[in-house]
Each structure stands twice: as structure tokens, then as C-alpha cells.
Image 1: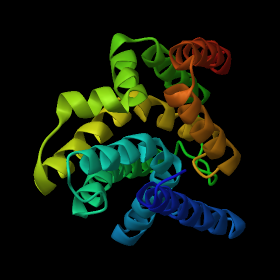
Image 2: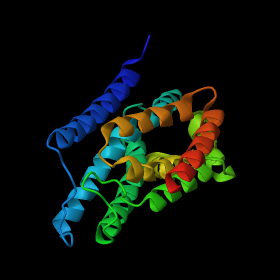
Image 3: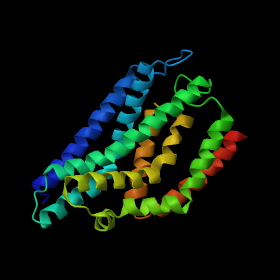
Image 4: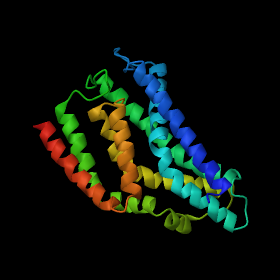
Length: 240
């Protein structure tokens, strides 16, 4: 039987993910495109940053579920309260990393816009740039850094045992650390959205599903390598 605490944590993750996807679907239904003006205002950048932040929350919240559930159980076994502020701070630290990534993604989108290399659907108009992005993402999938970060994500118990810190500050730091490994695992995949379209929700959903399979599937490492080879091949074809 699922404990009350685990049910609450899982429910919160589901609600957060669902709300993020509802917002993205709303934007898509409004035919949201990037502002095609000569230069962006601060408001344009903030809106783009907010869009990326919500997208990252929608894509990556489920990835934090195993470590959050395991952390709450370990807290209980240590005689603490499972649903005190430490669980929230662990999740907050994880999301802070992805919100930080969103700021850089929004800056990249701004740069592409200023260079007139982005379509209204937020996909690159340059086949060379698109191919290079796919090539780099594919190569990264095959690197030792990628696999080291993936192993940390695949083993939440190992991560918590080797990175355990006490107290609320410790929980926040652990969340930041776990977010760092998750970012190291997935950052290159996120740039692929600039090839297929940032607001192409079918591809956003496909990437989310792939990330979950990669992290929690029994053959995650092989899936990552196969995807890397596929992206390299796709990059070559796009450049040609």
C-alpha cells in the first residue's frame, strides 16, 4: 500500500506537471509565436523566459519523483517528519537549476531572433545550424560526462547516500546537486527544440517521454547511445 506521504508527494508532482502542460497547451491554442519585431523589449524576454521555465517544469518534474519519494522515506526512517520543509526544499533546488537553464535558453532564443535565424514557430531557419545542433547533441549523448550524469539520475539511492546533507539547507543543496546532474544529462536534448520548434508540443512530449525512458528504463544507457547515433545521422542529413 502506498503511504499517505508518498501519495501526497506523487500527487503534487502530477498536479504541477499537469498545470505546466495546461499552460503550454493554452499557449499553443492561442497560436503563440515569438514577437517578430526588430528587437525584443524586456517584456518579450521575460515572457519567453517564463515560457521556457514552465516548459522545463512540465518536462522535468516527473524526473525528480524517484529522488523525492526516496528522500521522504529516508527521512522517516531516520525518525524525522517526511513532509516537513526539507522535501519541498529538495524539489525547489532541483527546479531552480532548470529555471536557470531557462534563462540561458531565452537568451539563446533572443540571439537567434536578432540574427534573423528563427521562424515564427521558433525553429531555426538555418539548415546548417539545425544540423550542427543535432550533431552536437548526438555526440554529447555518447560522451562519458553524459553517462556519468545519467548514472546519478538512474540511481537516486546512490545519489542520496553519496550526497546526503542534514537540515533544510542541506536539502536545498542536495536538490541543486541533483538538478545539476539532471541538467548535465539532458541539456543537449533541450537544444533540439530549436530545430523542431520550441512550441511544437508533440516534440516536447516526445522528448519528455524519451528522457523518462532514458533515466528509468532498464536499458537507459543503450537508449541514450542509440539516440545519439540517430541524432548524428539526422544532423548529417539536415546539413546536406
